[in-house]
Image 1 (tube, each protein chain N blue to C red):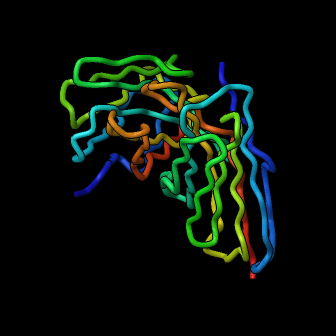
Image 2: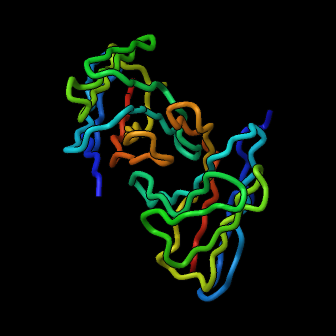
Amino acid sequence: TQLLEQSPQFLSIQEGENLTVYCNSSSVFSSLQWYRQEPGEGPVLLVTVVTGGEVKKLKRLTFQFGDARKDSSLHITAAQPGDTGLYLCAGRTGTASKLTFGTGTRLQVTL
Amino acid sequence: NAGVTQTPKFRILKIGQSMTLQCTQDMNHNYMYWYRQDPGMGLKLIYYSVGAGITDKGEVPNGYNVSRSTTEDFPLRLELAAPSQTSVYFCASSYPHSYNEQFFGPGTRLTVL
C-alpha cells in the first residue's frame, strides 16, 4: 500500500507569514498533484508536477517535486486569509487510473 | 458546462436504510471515482470506473456498490447504512489522457443515526 504522509497536519499562521507543507512517500510517482479544498466544497486542482526536481509557481505558491520523485513541497509566500483550506497532495504511479491521496494539511491564515 | 454534479447535498439516514448517491459529469471523462472524507481527514477511494460497464474496488469498498451504465453517470449505492458510513462523499472524474487530474463534485454530507 502506497502512503503519502503530509506534514504538518495543522498550521495556523498570521497574514504575511511564509510556510512550507511537505508530502513524503517511500514510493516513486510518475506525477504528483496538489489540490486545495475549502470548507464545504470539493478539492480543486492547483498544479501537477511530472519531472524530478521540477519547480512550478502559481502566484505566491511554489511547488517542487523531489529529484527522486518520492516527495514534494508547497511553499506559500506572504500567506493571505484566502489561502485558508485543506491542502492535499496526490501521487500517480505509472499510468495507473487512480491516485493516492495524502493525509492532508489544514492551513488557517488569520488577520 | 456544469462539471461534476452530485445529489443530494445532505442526507440523514437511519441505521439499516439504503440510499443512492447520484453523480453526473458532462465533460465526457472516461474515469470516475467515489471517495469518502471523514472529518479532518484526507480522501479514501471507495470505487472507481475507467469506462461504462467497468468498475473496480478502491481502498474501502465494503458496504457500498456502484454501477456505470453510461459515461456520464456513476451512482453509489449504500445498502444497510451503518454509523461508520457517516462521512462526506465526493465524486470525481478525469480524462485518461492527462495525468489523471481529477475534477470533483461539491460533495454529499451523509449522517447515519
